[in-house]
Figure 1: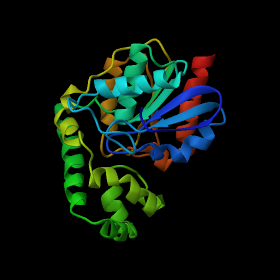
Figure 2 (figure 1 turned 30 degrees about the horizontal axis):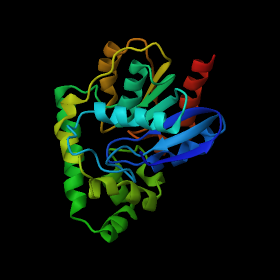
Figure 3 (figure 1 turned 90 degrees about the vertical axis):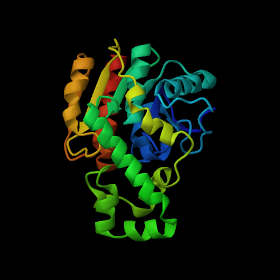
Figure 4 (figure 1 turned 30 degrees about the vertical axis):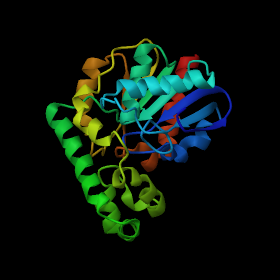
Length: 262
């Protein structure tokens, strides 16, 4: 079973992080979401405290979708609301298309890149991992303790590096500094991250206006693939909007879930 945390009560709401991240990425919004939902934050296979990916993992998004759906079954949950960031956003959209989510909120979802955008994202993530693998934790802590260091290391992920807690960010970056089994396979298989089909459930996409990893120009490709999705630009947010503006992020997720309940 995937590692997960549960809090709150009400209709279940799954929270799914991005590549090399962890379920604690949602800590900034969990309390607000738990006022209306039972919130289940998930560590994907090969991330956080979950087990490694299967030996035959091909790097595509499909096995990760199936793993999350398996968790829902294992926990005996009714069909949940799902929200995700980056890779997690792609998974949320795919679950909506498969009918295994009653609403989907995707924050800067992966998979809607052009070939150039795909290569850029691969280079940024691969390059950051190659750098951080050479640094002991003590050096990472020292760099993140400075404003210049936070800007350099976090600028592709958040719009306001100076507002972030250095210790939390250092923990978040451990997925890049010590990538788990499957990371290299996923990077090489970005072109196998399937773009979801249209769904009949309420679908909301929020894209950070200052996303430097998956620039919001990718919205054009998303609109062509998912013309029924509601799309909003999140002002002043980077690739991980729950770090830049937790209040806005929580309201976006709650608002979409309320539409599904109406």
